Image 1 (cartoon, helix red, strand yellow):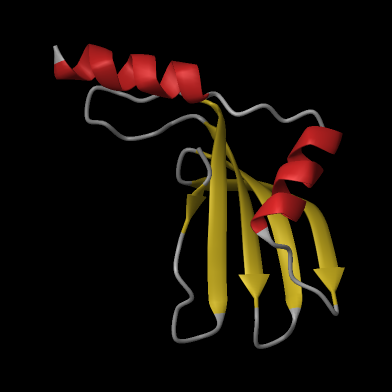
Image 2: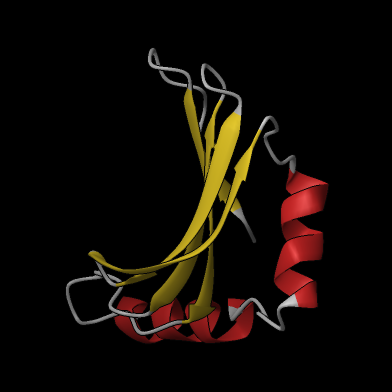
Length: 97
């Protein structure tokens, strides 16, 4: 599932998807996530990779447009990123035992 945040006061909107789930015992994600950051004030977007809480690298950037959920899903598919929903669910269930 793609997590989507609401627009904040600065015109920023974030969407993230876990592509390599690794929850630790404290329920903190140390896995790889792909983040879409839409800037509605500047009409631009950036897609980048995070490993846990650390920024890893920029993957794409666009000016004069923002990406909607469907466009983000299409980008993920074209670049062969697959959501790791099963692993996330499994990791949460192990922590709940």
